[in-house]
Image (cartoon, rainbow over all chains, first blue to last red; front, side, top):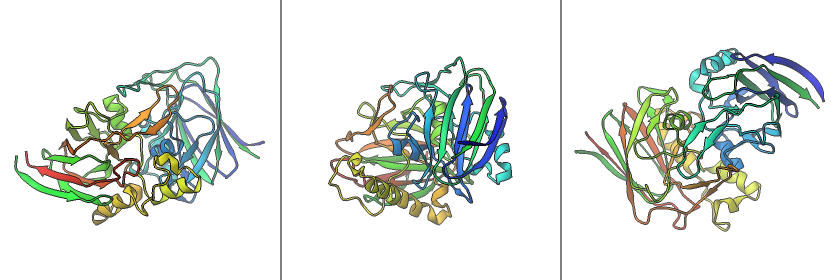
Length: 181
Length: 209
């Protein structure tokens, strides 16, 4: 695949890009990265954590799972999960850095009331099945892990590197690459 | 406590009402209810599953838990939970409805609704809640993912796998939610195709404090 663009996203900064169907967003990181996505040209169709959990019938997003919109359509598919085995990504929590994300989304005209809850990459939560207790439990990894998200439709993807002390391993640069077939 | 409103909502239909801070909503049922709430003075600040789970530190909604808005404001508190000890209320699901059913059928996954031979209704909670919220001008995309009362899910903490269960109250039991702000509340009496009985009616009673 050829590299369309490659950017370093430092802790407490964000990134967005238009990503076409078939392209892959490769995120190599270690600290919590909150991700949202919108259908390109129609931001009223957006990534939705509940439809994603139910479609996959799973609360831990990982390789092979699809990211769904609120209208129950596929948006992206996780085709690689380098964090598997070390920890789980999160589909339960609100944004760790909402103001930062809203700043990233401002050029797209997305206001606070239209901000969907995020996919929290590297946000490991300890979950107790019986009581339902959820406890943020950061899982530090020795080297950046790579997560690949393949676009199933034309999308706008936005993310922020959000190393909150309670939920994330220490802040580390993330490298975000868009790859075309 | 004085009864302000007392209504029975039939299976697979919707209901909505305004409430004042301090009033109590009692939902009495033995079937799944997809329930949402909005700040009545700011519909852009509706109930949100994520801050609610974070604040309560819990995947499920239980007695004593707060129900928070998208911006983190307390909207309601669960004071009574007639389902306690039998099952838990779900904060994972979206809503059933036409597009969800159509996709399950297209992918041959209807068996995940438990009754493989069940006839799926042509509408569900998505359509019921959209209809119930329409008089307030709130479209589908602005209706949050609900609290799924009486929807007991089996969640495997190791694999994350979720499956529906058929655990429901034997007879109607109450869930009491106190309004902590002026609210618009709405629900769908779910068609609940996963249960043995199918969806059943829901009684909603609002009490003055």
